[in-house]
Length: 511
Image (cartoon, rainbow, N blue to C red):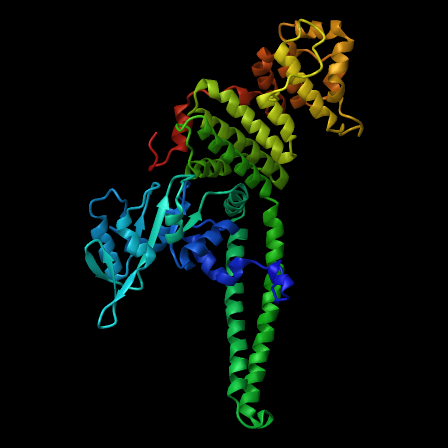
């Protein structure tokens, strides 16, 4: 916006990564293991171009995998932690001979002995060479030296002194970024020809852009170096005509490539429902760590399940049918895989969380209603309206008044009138017999709500009403809610099946 206001010429749409890198380079990064979504490419640019050494927040180990693949054998013996006794000696050798060096698994402490390296406090010797003081030694500096630091902590707290010395880069995956990654994985599996064509096209377009830039530079150079009358210089005219013809040819190729890229992208986007569902499921898995640190799931383990599902799910000649089979199989495979590592008391909660997030992915849920279901009425003030009957629970009435308040802020999506929840308290007060009969049922979750509420409320809204009337039946209500949305098998955790576990394992993954 600021650039536009200053009337500075700007490519539209402007993408920072196109200015700081090329398609050929980013394709190379992808082949080395860096995810190809926009955020990961920007992280890669910061890692390779920043004037401070990168400190990568890398809970899913995407950065460290990419760095190790990219640097290859040059990193042999030069991947250390501050706990290693020889890290200083190996760092000296890397600085002196221009090798890369990686500090991995950092916590929130960085040994101050490497401060001169982080701050690039060079000293110049009499012969013009640069040296740096490391500990009690002066080490000759090679400009090819590269330092990387990575931390598996998902939310470390680095002070301003560390942030000022390093380039802190968050490699933590976002839902949008993961969706793009999973789309690439899906298309590569389902349409390998399409993904190969896309990568080839990217390479060709990048090469043609570079060639076009060289031709433009040649034209300008020839014109600036020309002497005398340009029209009399036949060699110059011939060179200019040849360069112009090539430039026109390349421009036509670029336009054809752009149209082809658009066609490929239209086909790729059709697979996005699978990627979207996969991203939702991973973040549901990742959220389990809020319960206990034992429930930590890596992106690598999720991708293993994702790839296994792509290979084992039912085939279908119709794309929409194939996508539905993948989504259904993936949802259950992730549920079954995760349940193997959960305590029994947490499995229903996981099913409920999965159900809610999937519903949110299809159409946004009312966050206020969800917050009410989880927390109830949190107001410190008691409701001014007193409960009409002694049998109605005290806290239940407070919660009901809050639910009614939420109803008054909503419109019924069908009729466009005030939401039915807005009149719930009035209707309960108007017909004690019907509501008390419902309240005293042994299993009210199996019965229809009185006064037509069963037909005018969603399944989740009915669950909120149950929370007000019979909080003791909410767990059973959640089970029925999950079944109504996801089917019955999502409330029946799979039994231990060693054959299935063996199929999910690899030669590098112990059972």
